[in-house]
Image 1 (spheres, rainbow, N blue to C red):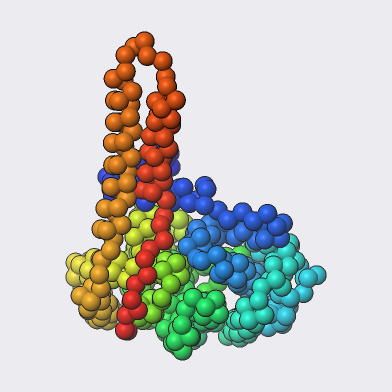
Image 2: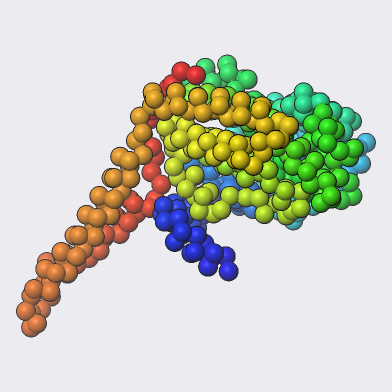
Length: 461
């Protein structure tokens, strides 16, 4: 049924067909499979706990893949401890605060999590530790520092519970996602592929993390509120308290109107980070690092657009509010330069603006929503005016390669058919036959396999 649905969607959106095929290729044949057992486990478990991140990490230069992979797994393990509502607060708080010390302890392992892959990650954690200890001292220092900051922040909010104010909400998102942006920026600079100026823009790195985290928190309402043995609640009381006495009330269809107003205000709050994300992206110098950073941000804006004024958020499941496979693939393989980023953000902003004016014109927060969208549109239009679009050049090159290979294959078979029926194959004809097939296969590879984009000049914010 899934393949049939994808086939119908491809016919309806033919521009998504090639990106989907490229994504399938990357998923099936582009996985990183180290021969070393411990590294092999790390990349295997990465594919299991976050398939999308495993694909995105392929975009990175080789010297950054291991540190970023380990960085992700360490923080995923920490997050699993925080999310496990079966762990008593008296046990959880010191564990969160001290977790940064565990990441270099070869004997550390524990049982936690509510999904088999997360359980396996923590059960076989010494393999992650083994690879962590093979990283450079600077990379280990960065990962340990961010883990310490995140763990302490998570522990603080075990005490605080539901964020009261939007400021509390921002602080929580900073601890669980903003510091990740800071750590990634430091790893990029430590690799020598990015100038140190990026680490001096900590506020922009923080906005990158907050934009992603808030999108996830909004989308995951149904899953979090139904968590057992106790719900997880991250929406700030300052927002939902305007519309309900309890965050769980939004599940009741009788409260749909209030739920939608609350949801739209949550989306509006997340939108204020988008302009800063564009500023950060304009500072990335290495094209592969750019792809790694750009893809999640573009996906987040697309997902946020789906969440806006969508009551499915409150009725679940989470899978009901997600980008189509074709849309995901298209965004993944077209978010490879600033021109494309501006174009995607502008497209999402314009569509949301139309919905604000038609669907939610009476919404209490719509004026603020439109203000944020106007800022995003202005930033995108200014960016488009000063950036070159090289997307067409790449597409034209791919089409020329595929067309040339096809014509050469056709010409070869036509040439061989001109020989008389009694002619025996010659060495030349056999060679030409296989050579034409090889060229045709190469042309297909050039067309479908993701290429490394050319560097772009750094833009001013």
